[in-house]
Amino acid sequence: MSQQNELTFNIHSLKLTVKSYLDKITEAGGWVGPLGVAATLLSTLIVADFKETMGISGEVWAATYIIVALACCVWLVLSLYKTKKVEGFEEFFEKLLDSAEYTKSECVLMLAVAKDANNIPRLLVYYDSFRGSFFLPWVSKHVSNSASTQAMRSVRHTFGCEPEDVSAFDLHELRLSSQKTSVSSGKLKHYDFEFTYLTFNKVPKFDMQQSPFQSGGKQFFWATLSELSEHPLTRSKNYDVFDHIEKYAEEIFDSKPGPSIQNSIRLTENHNLGAVR
Image 1: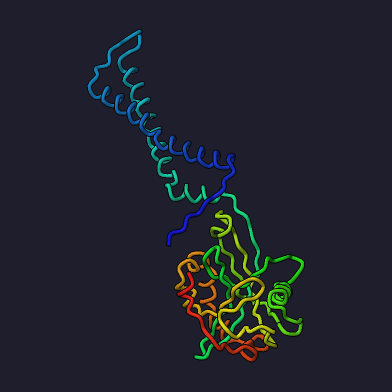
Image 2: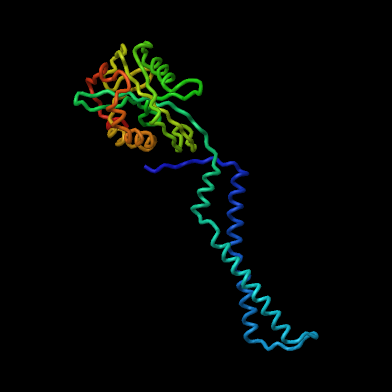
């Protein structure tokens, strides 16, 4: 699925960038003038018979034409050199993108893993019906708190857990910086993602062992990476995140930074994400 980026530009910055490129394009065409003058002078030198005029001898006139012709040749060489230095359209386009304004968002993404009846690891995700795609549980990052602290607060609120029911561990090596179109505003946005690994020391009161299940006004699923990658809208909106997780899949699914979620949650029912559109 194609994706369109809607950029926001500062009008002053945009004018300067475009003007600079147009000025260079104009300079690049500066070789035409000296070429025409040099060609005229050289042809004159070849066919003309210089005679004394206005008290100036023919030799002086010929020498003057030669000097001017040589000067035009130097001018032509310098103009051609400037033409080579003019950046191509791709370089200009990159500068144009660099002048675009974008907002920055810092998020904490939560990774909770459980195994299904076939012993296949699955990630906890929720379905956003408005955007038509799946997302990892997340919360906006605040400088004053660690990612794990904010993750635990969010999870306790969403799932109604007691403080001792859930733990979170920061996965500093999984940090991700990404620039893409925001699914909410449609504007280019820079994201800084931090990841935490969630472990449930005790199954929450509701049936979290099924997929899907409802909690906190959201519909949650336990999904494999392949299911998420095959879901068209999820792939187009969160390709960077799930590609990043797939890159570190072995560490995420096999490592146990703390009490394993698998000790408390064993999935009893699986839902085919392909049916969710």
